Length: 86
Image (cartoon, rainbow, N blue to C red; front, side, top):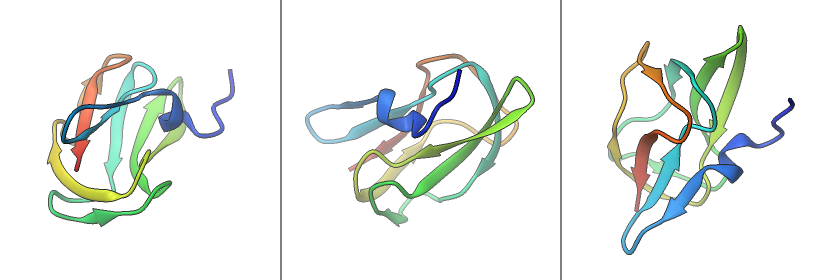
């Protein structure tokens, strides 16, 4: 299975924030932003390692990183909340 822009399939908009969710089970290899950072649509947020491949997770929209819910080396499930952008 090939993911061109995997974050596009796994995000949800709430009243005040955009939820960024894991598109698949894997391990957080890198976190490329910090809480408080401003991001633009399609900026890389995370590198997720799954099936020995590195998969970038992109910002679904621009905004400020409100909260990061995971740490480097965390194992995550598919559809797990990773970050809130507002």
